Image (tube, rainbow over the protein chains, first blue to last red):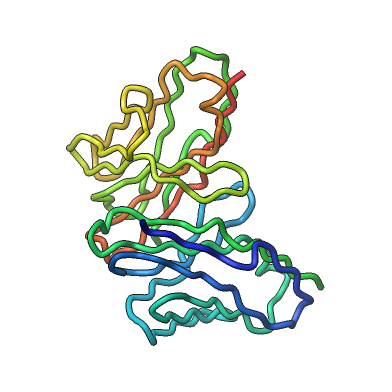
Length: 111
Length: 116
C-alpha cells in the first residue's frame, strides 16, 4: 500500500535558522513526488514536482531533493512569511490520478 | 496562472439539507478535477476524480449517492452533499489539472462545511 510519512510534525525556527523537512514514502512505482505549501484555512499551493532520484529543484529559499525512499525540503535562512504547513504527496506510476498525501510539517518561523 | 476558485468558502446549514459546492478553473482548462476531504491535523483524502463529460470515479468507501459530482465543462465541477448530517462536517477542497498525470494539481481554497 502506498504510504507517505512526514517528519517532524511541527518545527519552530528562528528567522535565518536553516533546516530540513523529511518526506518518506512507500510506493509500488513512483511517477512523481509533489511538494505543496498550505496556509491555515486555505488550499495547498503547488511548489515542486520531482520525478527521479537525484533530482533537485529550487525556489527562493526552498530546495527539494529526492532519493529512492525519501524527499527533503531544505529551507535556507527562513523568514516569518515561510510559516505554513508543508505537504508532500506521491503519485503512483500505475494510478497517476491519485495523490497520496502525508499529514504535513507545520513550520513556524519567529523573528 | 493556474488559479482555482471554490465557492462558498464557508457553509453552515441544518441537518437534512443538500449543499452544493462549486469549483472553477479561472485561467486554464481542467481536463480532470478532484475532490478531497480534510480533517484537522490529517492528510487530504481523495474522494473522487472526474473528467469533463464523464461520470466521476469514487474512492473506496465514498458514497456516490451521498456526494454527487458533476463536471459539465472544462472549467467547472460541482460537489453536492445530499441530505447532509453532522458527520459530513469537514473541510472540502477541490483541485484541477490540465493535461495528463505529469501536470500538478492546483487547489482551490476549500469549503468549510458545518452541519448543525
